[in-house]
Every structure is written in C-alpha cells, then in structure tokens.
Length: 177
Image (tube, rainbow, N blue to C red; front, side):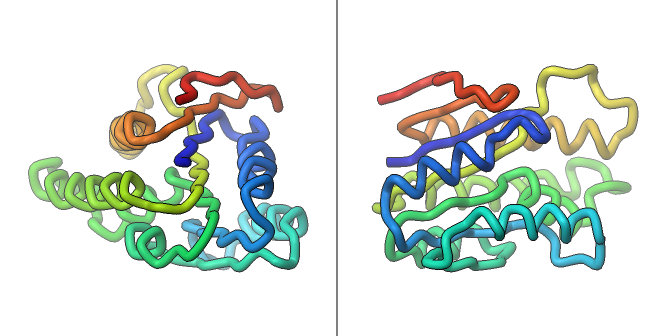
C-alpha cells in the first residue's frame, strides 16, 4: 500500500507517517532525503526525528529517491518529497535559469520517482509539504518550489492508495482505496 501524508510545516505529518509505517512492520527503512549540511537548526530537526524512531529501523540518506525505492526489501518511510525536490532544484541550478533550460530534466526525474513509487511492491509512506494554501510567493525561487512541489504532490497522490492531510496533529483522509 502506498500512502502520501501531506501537511504544513510542523503539522505533525512526520509523526503520523511514522505511526502508519510502524504498523506495517518492525524493520522499516527510513529514506531521508534532506540535506546533510552544517545547519544547527536542521541538525536539531533530524535529531528529534531520529529519537522518535525505533532502533530496528534502518536509515538511508540519499538524493537518489527512485533508486532507494527500487532497493527496498520491506516497508519504508520517505521523509520528505519537499526536501528531495529542493535538492533536485539545487542540483539543476534552476534558481537563475529560464524554465526551458531545466524543466524537462526535472520532470523526467520526478516522473521516474512516481513510476518507481507506483511499482513498489512494499508498503511505503511518503511525507510531503502542502504548498498551495498561501499567497503566490513573491520571489521566483518560492514560485518555482511551490509550482514544482504542487505538481509532484499531485502526481504522487494519483499514484497512491491513500492520501492523508495532517492539520495541527489531526488526520483528515483525502482518499482511501
């Protein structure tokens, strides 16, 4: 079963996703897509997530999300699509280039992730950020991120068996098959 858990920053979506995937097995692969930068705030977030996870979980830190999904041998949690996308946007150096320079490459990469997600034979839960409830971002980088994550979220949601929205720690099922 494929489940997408979406919500705003600090909505509780990661806690909900961790609970969901822990119900599907004790040996879970945690696919961490975030940056490995020297950022103390980011390090604190990662430590809080790590402290909540059982010792039986295996952590895989990677930007190759499609490859990680293909390599799974059991249930997994992907946290999160937004940080994975940010890494792809940085890697493609999109921030100052016209869309026609990078967009087709990005869409190929996101399509590969969606295809791998769809064919994954294991229970997998992905966390993502919900970006569509605010104003259109003032800066180009914010608009690119919101546009591309909104598109990726829609594609992954269509390929999911279940889609959950988390608001203030409360789960709202958007779709369940």
